[in-house]
Image (cartoon, rainbow, N blue to C red; front, side, top):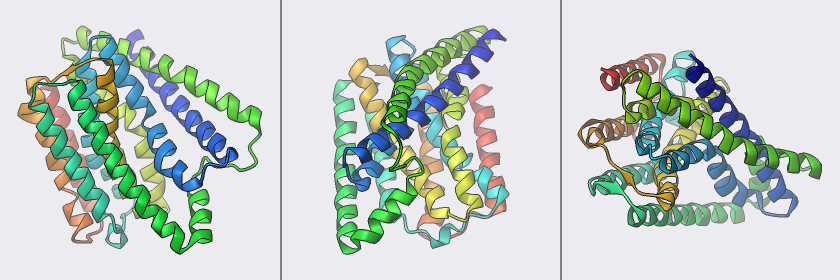
Length: 319
């Protein structure tokens, strides 16, 4: 029971620390004159993935690579089936009005690259460099496209970006920015340590592997920020935010988190991933085709179906 409570405490600390770190980093960048466009494409994207990143690094250093890989693969599956499914049950998401073809193709390419590298048996430094290089190319292309759009409607684009960054406060005092950064930098490693250490204890207590704990408990926990964002976006009828949040998060999970984690040590690939979990992740990604290319809405019926599929996946992993 104590291990469960400490793991839960670690997760709460991680989520809060990730939030305040993003707030501090965004406002520091804006106060230093960094354009809102650059902030939205880099700092916010990396910052919201900070909990998963710290967990993966901690898991690699603690010789529990199953948690690191399970966290990424499980989070990507949960992001599509659970994070899109639950909000759709509350309110239909009108994804038929969205245009996310390009980023979705990037996500699929990232998924295929990740699976192909997994068949090498481990994610070593070479695989990590390949993943980070792919991330760099995609970020460069997105930034180039965003800059072109900004030139076409400069003032409107700047205003829209600042309003879209909920963390942005042009009048935030320096002392509060510093406090946010300090709390984030202290809280993230503390929360990651509590969660990974106690997740391993839970795994050993119940006789399950680190991989299973990473695919379920840790994966769902670190998907909570995406779930909260998507629920609010669905209730506000902002389907583009909901869908974009999931697609962007999945791409960063595959390329950035495992890419950076390999700098701290190799990550062996459990045969379970090659036989089952990676293909479930790919299948879940392909389920988005009707919503991205055929302009279908994610209705309540679709939401129930997605959540049911996730429930079946969790049962299959645990049995």
